Length: 172
Image (cartoon, rainbow, N blue to C red):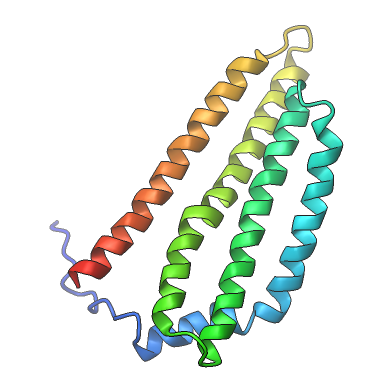
């Protein structure tokens, strides 16, 4: 069986009506909800970060701090996308500005969402290890290094994705 992309419709340009409708629905119409919610998420996660920062030597506290930072990254990306979409769809900015903001979102906000999942996964696995074997604690420094390396790889993949979008836009 041969894989072929011939049956797929051609990719549409950023200024096409379909793309505008998707961006309008995903960002503009949801901006009255996403902006206040994102501001609340930022304020809430700043409090979480501050409360755990005094005990940052413990693994659980450092993982909660990582989750808070990643959620702040995600929320700021949502605020930027919603704000720019308001300006684009009210006619203040060009549609191309929303496209470049989407690339910014891919580099900052999407890694934040991935990091949050990684930190939650590491927290769950270490909690299971401690529960199963309570007399043997995981090596905190080793867990931090592996988690940081994994977050770095995920970030580099998101950056590569954004660079691919930029190159694809330049070529077309």
